[in-house]
Image (tube, rainbow, N blue to C red; front, side, top):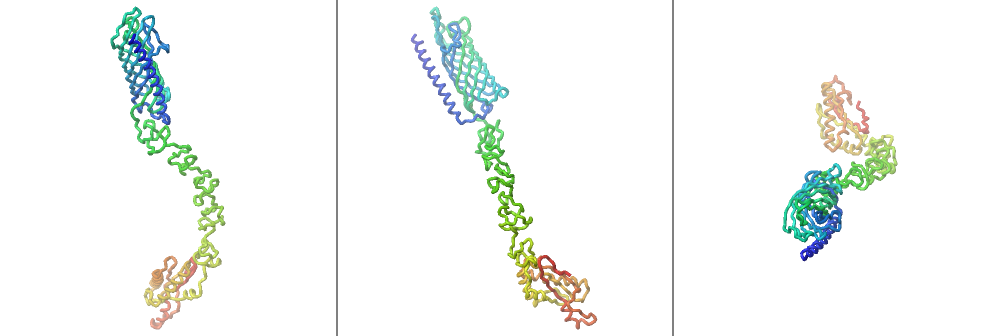
Length: 501
């Protein structure tokens, strides 16, 4: 009786401690899963460790305790499970517990332990329920060994076999797994345990001793699933496996897109407003290709040059600030939208033949040549017989022409070369062109930047300045012929309306 009383006290203490342990374990599990998103499936972490408390209900010759809650006897156990496929797990199940019964003088008090290999059939295999569903129903069967030690007294007062013994055992049952997170779950299950002997209750005749075993506990997935981009979503279910480090992702492993515009938040310049990809995820209400945040006129289509505001004539000045809203296309305008007038003569550059020199409108915006320049244009550069070299005596004249060209920067100078009648017409034509080119080359050397302002033309012997009597000797006509070996000038406006005849 002393032993039984001690065992009763021990059993009551164990029951109290196991109850506290289960309550604490479930509390810890809940704390562990706060803020944790379920992502991986069991295939990613294939090993699972379950720790649990258990309750036994005996059925045998002494008593039938099935479904009598006040007859529960407490114990505990550990399961080590291994993922085989979406439908099956294998496992090693170890339990320890106690059982007792007392009826009509027959009584026993026993300790039991089992070690079994189990096969679990899961219903959350992707066909019935998803593998990562919160609730996971399963069926299981197991077989192995049972160890027992009992203190038993039969109804007639005789003692049963009180020595340790081993026997075979099997169980089958069903359970529910509650998935809190990738790592933690809870479960409840009930199994019917069949022993291979009839020694536990002291009676070795009749039916073998059987039990209902109820388990409740926690499961922990061991190991770490492969996660190449380290975003917290295992590769096997990561739909965006190349997400940059540090980017917040959703349950599928893809970057979060708060506004649902197809541009991930980490690339979205307007992450809370739906927009378009080519504008960095920002909205563009007027569809002008300029994000609203940069658009000075977000409700009116405009251009980039006018910060999104309308520009009817396309001159780069918004209509609201354009004082000349009908400027022709391609015309350079000022800040007010009107054509630029560089020389301030009232003739806009696009109409001004001399945009860098002030002049009256009736002259195309070009200044009239002053008297000194007009006289200068009447001067001639003379050449030696059969020569195209500019003589030193004429360089001062050409320097003065350089000054005139600088004074009238928009005008064009026609350089006209001539020859006397000595020689063939073909030769004299070439000679006249060489003389005009020699003058042009000198002017360029003296600083004329734009060679296009200098137009050369050779007239050969066709335009003599002095008529020569060809029947006279060369010596008598030398002076007249020297006047015809010349280069003359004409300075005109840049519309190229030069007298080329």
